[in-house]
Length: 613
Image 1 (spheres, rainbow, N blue to C red):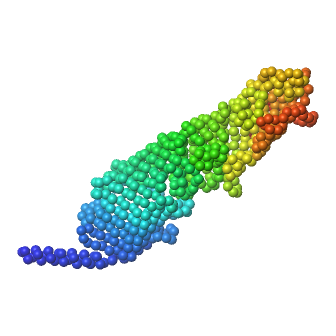
Image 2: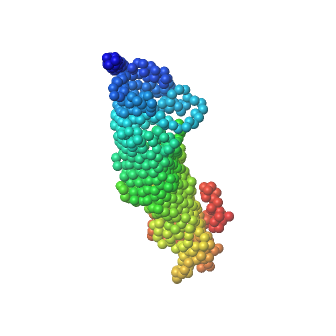
Image 3: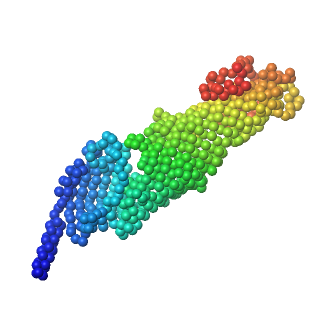
């Protein structure tokens, strides 16, 4: 009996050895490639595929090539120079599959969608209806204890036809067993920018339970810029269903812009953190907080919705700043020259991203402007930037504006059309703001402005802007001495009339082109007489040339009603008697025609009692 047992054992060992030698020397590549071609309905080729029998089943392959989907770009969907897998024998019998080691070198994967939106990674003909939702299940996922990828690349053709390249210099996934925490590390590039990743993951056993969210702690970095997510995912294989906290630290926006395929000259630190969710094509931060340079802010909503094929992404941003210094952000260096801050007016006709923004600022600094309680609501659309609402408190007045910037037919820049309303602007504060000398007028003015401008930047457009305005005042006061001087009252030779004269109404119609403007009509009605005038001014040169006269029927018996001319520097003008033709006086006294104004200004002008009807 013993001899038979020994003989049987020797025979078995001999057969297994012979089988092992046969398997080790047999190339399975033609058989596997043929079967894969039939199953995947696309060409598959393998230069060599060998199997080794030992403590573990070892499969190695050389030059594996998977063709693209029929009708796709004529290039392989996937190519792997070499790959080796060590598989546990027992897992082949009872599952799930246990791969103790898997290495791949030189993988090149190309992904794209066809005209009907089907990805080349899908198999079979495209379906005309959406598939029925299937319950998620990961119980049969294989266990990979050690995965190493080197010198690999993923290329994705976007809906616009551009190529997005993700390079992987080295990637590693490792776990002691299926119950131990796993670690994923990778170094590579995104759009040519160096990126590294570290993910501390829950055990593979937890990954198989689709009824519970999968914990993950992921850190990506590029230079000094880091993006950290800590939370869970309901669909970790597709990096979907994420709920957790996201934190972004960017000492400079250069890395972020480079990853996005753009460039910037800004020198701004950014920190942002808040509750984060990713469901399907929707990414959002809610109730986030952060700092832009040294300026804190809150962000109740930051949402990105990925666009469908051929459609732009949509970004919704709602942010609030207690203090925002745009001069520091846009000026030269980190703390730029306040007078040199500027905003570009370039408008993309087909942007990859549409933006809807709601911004509120407690204190705003831009160029020479300091404003309080600023609220902005606007949107970036195809070929258009719209400002639905812009309100602020500036120099004690309430300002409300709306308008748009549209792309010009040729070149860079945009065309601005806007309307601005000013309520309660103190005359003396306005005088100081404009650099005008003594102004014998008290009270608060209201105004409506319409602006049309075009240029590459906001400052450039302002230098050539066309603006029409109607300003008015009620219940103010004017110097009695000015009324007497304007009406050439002979009493002013012997005395200076004291005090102020109540103003019942004031109106001024202004037209400005490139900083040079005209005023006509200008009329002030007071208890001591009515003054009227017309003239011109130049904001660039700070000069004025204005002729002012009086209505003889409203002045005293001592008034000669000879007009005066105010000319020269705004800060220190010269005042001399002037000659006024009968035609000019008749023109000022005639009924005022507001139909020459832009339509949006006419109702406001007609409300002013100083406009004769």
